[in-house]
Image (cartoon, rainbow, N blue to C red):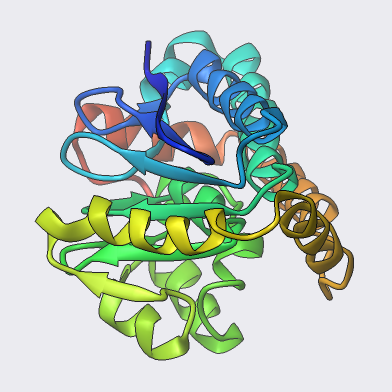
Length: 252
């Protein structure tokens, strides 16, 4: 299974993405992640959830090869799966701490942008390669991590930002050595786990209630443009070039 839940310390659940080689999740994986996050938040004794990953990086986004192989059904499934997983981070009944190492791309940014707290290793990078893959999306969530103009430059150029840069913006709480990442996440989690579970749950609900942007509606709008690019045929060329490891035709 690409998604595993651990419960080794009181009040703290750990949801782990483990889908080699790069933690690019297929449709089933996104829905499994959503289910795991919601389930962890519903455990009465839990006060906080840590979302992390094994392997080379945190998450490389959707499985583009699955979309190329299965077409419309897989694209719609990926859209709905990502929507469910991002919403599950946001709507988890307790705070979610994202512990990020290596690459955090596309759907990974969607997860992290909706998290309550982010800690990262010093090798972590955050980016949206969507424009190079014939898609749009997760700018909603990137906007929660970087300022507006920086977000726009990252979308247009598809170039990532470092954990150190995000730490300067205040969106990443701590940057640590990779070997210290899990310990750092648990240090933050234990501070939260020591609080009243009832108050922490109401705090999460209240903070979501005062957000200036409805992340669900905003992201759904972005997804509509992804499907428009797919129907127009532009997206297929970009995805095919990625799968075939060649330069894409960018004349359209």
